[in-house]
Structures are given as C-alpha cells and as structure tokens.
Amino acid sequence: MKLDGILSGKTIIIMGVANKNSIAWGCTQAILDQGAKVILTYQNDRIKKSLDRLVDDSIALVECDVSEDENIEKAFSQIEEQYGKVDGIVHAIAFADKETLEGGVLNTKKDGYNLAQDVSAYSFIAVSRYGAQIMNETGSIVTLTYFGSTRAIPNYNMMGIAKAALESSVRYLASDLGERHIRVNAISAGAIKTLAVTGIKHHRDLLKESQSRTVDGENVKTSEVGNVAAFLVSDLASGVTGDIIYVDKGVHLI
Image (tube, rainbow, N blue to C red; front, side, top):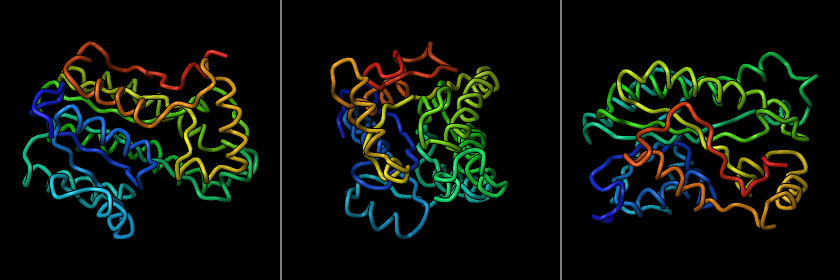
C-alpha cells in the first residue's frame, strides 16, 4: 500500500473480481496503487479460491452474494465491525443466464428478464442503500456499464436492457444520496476480453469490431478503466456525480 497516492488513508470495497482478467481486478490494482486499503467481496467459495491465488493478506475478503438483500446487509455490517467506515464502493457485478443472453430480446422469458435485472441493476440499488450506511462523509459509489445500454449491440440483448436500468439508477441514486455527500457514478468501459464478455455469443466479433472503432486502433485495458475508478472514488472527483464516464478509447463516438 502506497502512502502518497490520491487514496491514501481511504478504504474501498470492490465487488465483482472473478479473476486476473476482470475489470474489477484492474480497478483493484489501480486503487491499491493510489494508497487505499481494499476489501474484496466474493459470491461463493469457488470465487474465493480464485481470489486466494490473486491476493495477499493485506487485502480483506468478505463473502457477499448479492442475490439477497440480507446477504448485502450482513456483509456490510461485518465490514464495518471489522474494518470501520469505508470511503468508496466499486460495484462490478452483472449476470444473465445463457438462454436469455443468446435467445434475443424478443424471446426473453420473464424469469430470465427478472434474473438479469435483479443481479445487474437492482443489486446496485441494494449495495448503495446498505453501503451508504457504513460510509464516511464525502463517499463515492461507482458501477460498471457498457454502451449496449443505448445502442442495439449484436448479441448483447437482455444485458443492454439491464445496463440501461443500471444507468438510470445511477442518476436517481446520485440525487437521493446527494444530501449525504455521497457521489454515485458509472464507468462505461469498452469491450475487454473478460469472463463476462466470453459469455456473449460471437464475443470475438464484438471485440474485433470494438477495436476497429477505437480512435487509436487499440482496445482499452482494464488498468485504464481502473485508473478512472480510482479517480472517481477519490476526493479529486468531488464535483462529479450522476454521470456516465466513457472509458472505451472513443468507440462511443462513432
């Protein structure tokens, strides 16, 4: 942990690291590099085993399956009890089942719709509610989105609808939490080869097309997304809330 970064003395919760290729892991590394203490949450024992191979004892691990509100409340209560108040949260959690992702929006069934919205969008509301209760003044909450929320990206399907709901939630939560000096923002990251992206049908075509539309011909890196996350949870971003910040090498321009 550095002592002279923009996050020195701050504690940040990061939710959603699956492996070393995760955008959330890029955020973790950038936030650590800026001097913060990091707490990672994980969904289950399988994810914990993966995290154990990535982190050392300086990073705390706390179980939190966001499928139930009680789990979130319990995890955040545990964090406050063991580590005190926190200064920021990075929410990098999304899910849709394979049938829903691959079947097209027209064929989306109610159960698949509800699951995608519950994990990908509602969980951010619940995380913000319970997270705000253990947050220091001038806290910051950040989530991850993708511009399939505003464009019909081939094969992104139901996840685009869930991301649209997530982005709307950012604006309303920013309004709700403003009086408590808690900022809420989203990073719209470019297409990166992560575990989540490989779940999308023809994901190689998506990555290739995304790269062709970047302004420099190179896909964005997880470290570049992480640097923006570090900025957003820092005091340098005190005037930024309710915003969607694109970190995609200009793909959204075209």
